[in-house]
Image (cartoon, rainbow, N blue to C red; front, side, top):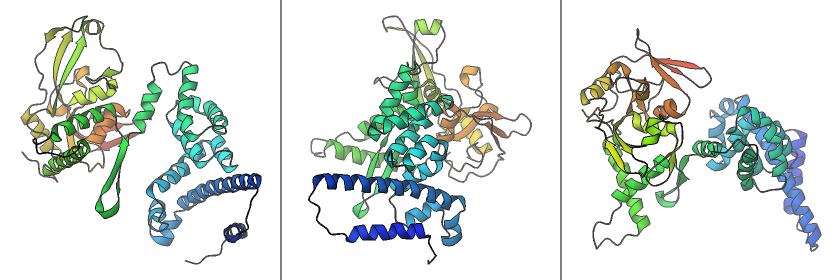
Length: 412
């Protein structure tokens, strides 16, 4: 593709070419340091300009018109940029306009691209009313610290303001940063890294421990090798059932231990300790309990068991099958094509929601998280039986599901 470029860009390219072929020997340490800093500032300015140009490309959909690719796909497939580099560029492309002080400092090479990303990430998980004030402080702090120190500075600042006594902001930020990356390396192998929420990490750790037990005295695999093989076994077990939901009862049992004092004073909205000491939010606990067999255990002041209740099976096998067939094995969220895994109580059990077909909605894992921890609510229309979703900002989406043959085997 050949196109005329501006004189300014031509000048930059010419200057870079002159710099590339300059083979003069510099022996002065002061000159070396000064030139390094000047070149580094120039690179930062070019990175800031690259973000703006990428934003302009995306705004006019230039790559689709010229190359038949999305902007993201063009950067990956035509420019051969690493996925991580494209993701960072993409994030700044979208988020920097809402952070004017950060963008101005980045344009002026007062902070690096890594600093800008750290500030954007930190601001995103703060209350909206604090962002404008805290952004100025973050930019000033970034001018004299490394990008890795930004998150700690935010924690300290919030604590100084008396807004982080229970570390809720820290936990919310960690929750938003959850994720797993799987990259293909040489000869088809994969590199795995990520950050797991406590409940997911606990489940994976226990599953790996069970599936990765030594098979006998002749098993000479290392712990890491057994964990690797166990992960493959877990994935194959899921693929073997094609991710089909459970119709034989609840997918898990939740043993709820309740101190007598807490029970008598009613449950409070507080972070909950798992048996291994990790913490999960009340919303996460409610999501895990939504499609679970609940066994209440009341504890005394010294942790002794005072009472063990009967297991509450909630939805029966017949109800789970009927709800699946009614909606054709589809998630209740509009347009969702994900595999359903959880039978959700539309009116929560703690609000008196019955274990009835009309109060049941099969959901994929993501949308089950969304309705418990993402600020969305779900209702079912009493007349046309459609599902009405309302988002945290009042946006609404509706899905009408009619009985049809499930797209995936039901494994009834």
